[in-house]
Amino acid sequence: MPADKRERMIESLAVAAALGFLVLFVAGVSLAVDSQAIAVETTALVADPSTISLVGRPGDPSFERLYRISDGSSVSYGVVLSLRSASSSALVAARLSRLGELKGLRLLGSASAKLPADAVEICSLFPGADEAIGRACAAVRSAEESGS
Amino acid sequence: MSEGRDGFVPNPVLAGLVGVCPLIAVSRSLAEGVIYGLGAAFCAIALGAVIPPLKGIVADRLQAPISLALSTALALAYALCAGLYSPTLAASLWIYLPLLAVSGLSLGALRRCSSRERYGPDGKSRLGGICVESIMFLVTAAFIGALRETVGLGSLTLPTPGLRPTRIEFIGIAPLSFLLTPSGGFILLGFLVAAYKIIVRAGGRKAS
Image (tube, rainbow over all chains, first blue to last red; front, side, top):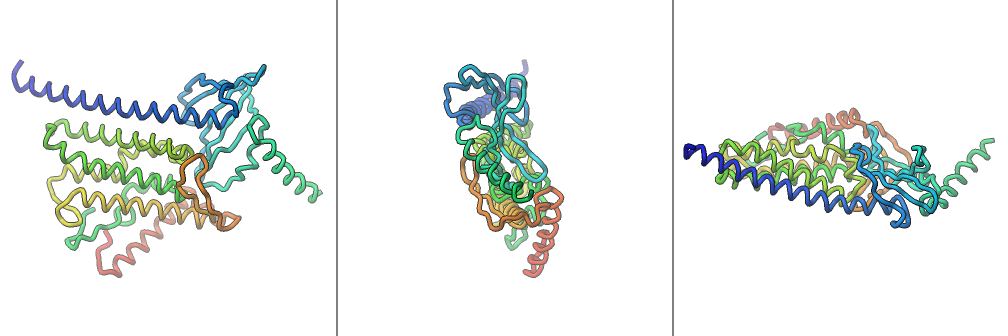
């Protein structure tokens, strides 16, 4: 092999190795962030961390992880969804039955929209949601009663 | 865009319209504007600092792929850190965070680093010019986000860590919520560009 060709090949291999280290670095950061994200989502979905387990990564742009929640005899599934419109976005925790029926939603946070954060905690499966349902329902009921 | 001889650096957004499409798409609040502007500034400044020393080490034929790989790695690392800082804001900025790798500001920094000319605010430093433009981009992104949110929703969202960013409510209604849509954002940008040109010309300088 000619000397200049060998030199170019060594140069390319060195650069490829450097880029490989770069990929490893980003992958390491990604793993660290992923474990933190799982901890945040688990806390958002259930009060007791022992009842939840990660069962899949659907690769969907709206939700990255799917969890299995075992509450005694019943089994449900949980996801943290990212909902977007042209003017706003929100992060929502959702619990689904085994058949895929929506059992409840809980707003975790919104970046700009004016959403009634307490009123959308509509599922009693979530910790602390009973009070929110009570407040939201009472407000709606009183408005309807005064209207009729 | 280039600096004048007196060291005046035009605003990259309002004078050069650099990276306005993703900027308007995502800067719907102060928090989103700050996180996006900070990412763009971080990527551009880091590229401006890292690429020139590499030129002495790496062959010319390998510089373009290395620059792009570095740019992508920086944008990805920033997106991951933003997700750690505030999952809500990172989810809101969505694909635009990794796309910072090819934002107008990052590509401008790469172009400057590959240029043989020496230009910056002092006429010598490339990194100085990149830093000034990046800080201007960050401030402009934050300003546009804050203006859209304040006028559009009557509130201000601060880029605080955690799931729920801190929100300051000024009024209970959303007076001009269409400003949060991309079309409303571009209308507002048009007014800001016009105001910027008037101010710069009044100061006796060239606006672009």
